[in-house]
Image (tube, rainbow, N blue to C red; front, side, top):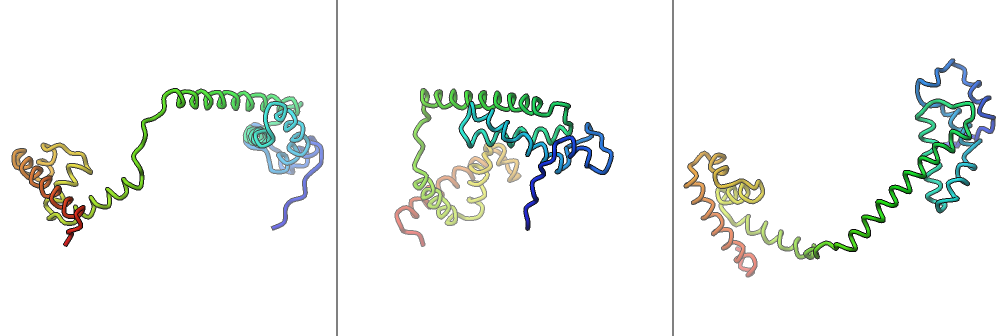
Length: 192
């Protein structure tokens, strides 16, 4: 795929070169208009952004400025001043965002989170639990899944199973007891 040759015509020529009459308030600029606007003003916008930001961030500002210009679909009589006004707002947004990130980082340093359990240990524990669940009868496994995974209360489990709350409580008690026994079997390496 070949890359298009940059258009170096002035913006007025690019706007008049468009063959169809176009209401500039109707939507985005045409690719040719956007490219011409970019070729004519991108360096100046970049230099302006570069006075406050490093190169990569300045390039992000330039991209955002021309994306906004394209979406607006209108070019005023003085596009350079208009683009700088857009760049000024984009820079202000970036400065505010950076302040929020810095404040968040400072709050995080002042109030560190509690240490998290070792992820590998949690994965191992879940694997042991899954193996223990496979040792249960289907009825007990269903009760454990309703209790733990669906986070249902005993009364809600009774509703799901179509039994009384007392019967569900008994089933929950027995399922938990059988799960503990299956868990011990798996952890002791006596799985059959």
